[in-house]
Image 1 (cartoon, rainbow, N blue to C red):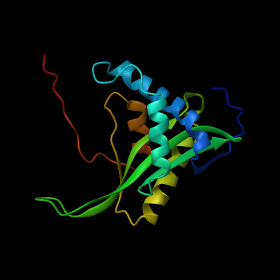
Image 2 (image 1 turned 90 degrees about the horizontal axis):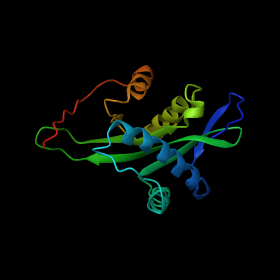
Image 3 (image 1 turned 60 degrees about the horizontal axis):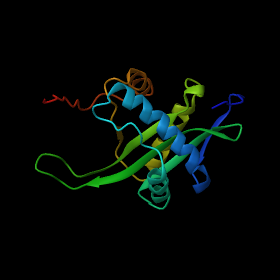
Image 4 (image 1 turned 135 degrees about the vertical axis):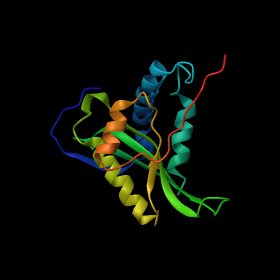
Length: 165
């Protein structure tokens, strides 16, 4: 992706016209995950299924699908969902926002698009009266971990895994 740079990144709600670009960004993210963990991820994720998936997200009021753009070109997106959990055996009832994906084109990483997307998600979470924002990151993704910590997120839970032959 070639981007003409002017340094101004803004966010806006995604539309159906953005779906092909979102598919490409998701494919970029998926490739990174597949390269790091081919035993867990399929080699191909983007396609017609994802088109229908994104279309469903646009019509779901519990989800927030937002794009970052520079000079009118989409350079990233975030997808978040507002969730409510009732009281459990040990956990309190709460409403929170879970970020499912945040993807910024490799061509513009470090220019502020990720930060703008997260600011937009946090503002949406506040409007939903959420108590917080959560997300999961695979341990191999050190750049993402560093980014999230830089913007004020902290470790809450660590998932450990053991592969069985």
